[in-house]
Image (cartoon, one colour):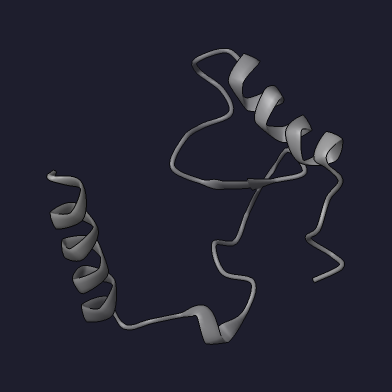
Amino acid sequence: MKPILRSPKEGADTIVWLATAPATQPGSGKFWHDRRPSGERWFAWTRESGAAGERLWDWAAAQTGC
């Protein structure tokens, strides 16, 4: 986990950078790490089938009333 862990200050840096960026940059719908778009999955074991993702989405929507 060492390559992805950050101090609170380092972790906040990208969030603040994104929040204050012009609306046309840097883009949305991406996972950002150290001010760069990054892959969504760090570990192969975190990948699930599309069906599992849909079930999770449906469950979360039901729990929140969406």
